[in-house]
Length: 187
Image (cartoon, rainbow, N blue to C red; front, top):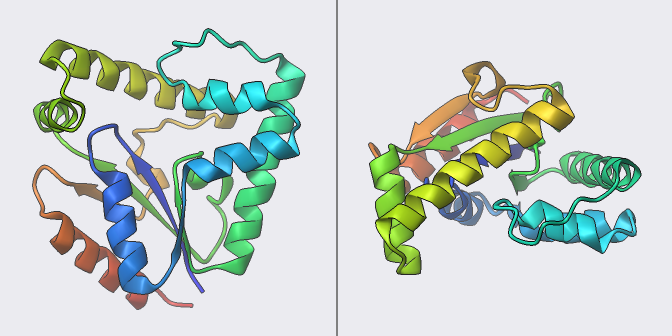
């Protein structure tokens, strides 16, 4: 019974890597649906929208009590998933919430800025400048989220068992390597 958390940069293909690993290991993959479930538990649909809205386009500012209810719900859901095991949790501060859990493998997925920009341009058909702005805003939001609510530095390698640069390694090779690393971990 193992849990993998994936922290990823926009355009790094971390979610795609998670899907490949989940398929190989037979694990469930949990990502955005966790946001919706936590918002339901916290009875705060605005928190779900605010959390999804990394670029601040909706201008939502939930009050501190709504934020705390949401964060508590996220923590509860992630801890329940970890207890069940055989799951990959993408994002939502899994590396912070489960940092002391013995059966968790924390992964960080990165890629060079130019690679990320090109991937966003191709995936969304937007101009290069818009892709770069989205990436910068996303990086800022994700780093701020972890600092503000969990008091950790998103880029600190000490929070991860492995860091994979998808600009330097093929996704299938990365998935195979990650699966091997997870299988070799002591129970």
